Image (spheres, rainbow, N blue to C red):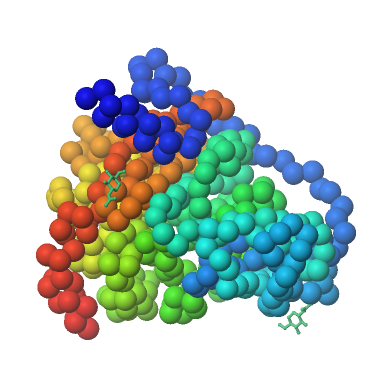
Length: 440
Ligand SMILES: *[C@@H]1O[C@H](CO)[C@@H](O)[C@H](O)[C@H]1NC(C)=O
Ligand SMILES: *[C@@H]1O[C@H](CO)[C@@H](O)[C@H](O)[C@H]1NC(C)=O
Ligand SMILES: [Fe+2]
């Protein structure tokens, strides 16, 4: 028995990458106040200097490198290799830019590099000039670890959240929407790009859009222009025709990014693409199925109550039939985790819903919850923080949520999640899934 508990503790410790002490939420816990928006002093830059570097997966064994230059003439070239300063390969890509009222963006470069080795550090530089950056590709097998935090913004709390994530050992950052909170002020996209560069140039940042990315102006500006120009995701690589929804695979995980702010009804392009994408999922190769979207479907906070109902009504039967293990949402500036659930009823073959819109944006926290706590809600708290999902193997994943307690990450919620495959849920849903796929 002693041995067993030592074993357990050592597993927990080794899984636990954040340095956190463990503290239960007590009556005497004083919740921290919102913090100031960061200010970014203007620094003159050489006009061809790469800025706002970030990376994202771009199909199997490939990575997209994105950066911005002030000038339009520096080349869209990335040189890379596995030893520092020795660039044995190079790739050429493309550039874009956009105008928004009086603002003109810099030149936005997108370059796909690869094929790359799995779980390997690469050194690279952009536009044929220093500085050198460094990235690590994700592993091809379990374990794989995701950092998860939405609704980031760019306040001092955002900085704390990012610092905590930076202390952690993880392979990829998943963001369920609301990145910069630029909200029409285009230079805030640039300061956000600079803020996240240290992390986003080193590990893939896979994002989906929130309401703060929309920035549309009636009859004048279509939505998501800045977002799609700057945060191009592998939609073409995953058979989608829109940067607003796509999928990718990493290790044994199939991840689907959905759009809460584009059509999702049964006649929509997104619905048709989702059905096709789900039909391609092979649970022997990718036993885990994750979904991210912005507006939560299960939410007991007063904030944004019911906003996800339309999308839920349209897509929940499909996702249930396909057997989605975990769904991450943002939007509500707080943390909440559900039991496995389907159509508001606890169901061991249902999906675990996690709201993690607590990255640290300037709007502050969503404090008010409906009481009593619904039966499906296991843990809820209005604090800033981030989550870590370590998928250990095809059957077990360890999820933990780390509250930003002042300036330390404190592990506040944790749970082992068993895959639906391991619970025998997938085979039993095959018939139902085929029926839905055959409709329309
Ligand atoms: C930017 O892209 C355009 C085509 O979209 C191309 O004509 C131009 O040469 C590119 N600029 C650079 C510096 O690569
Ligand atoms: C998967 O990981 C869990 C947790 O570490 C472990 O208990 C289990 O035996 C593993 N399963 C396999 C098939 O390795
Ligand atoms: Fe939002």
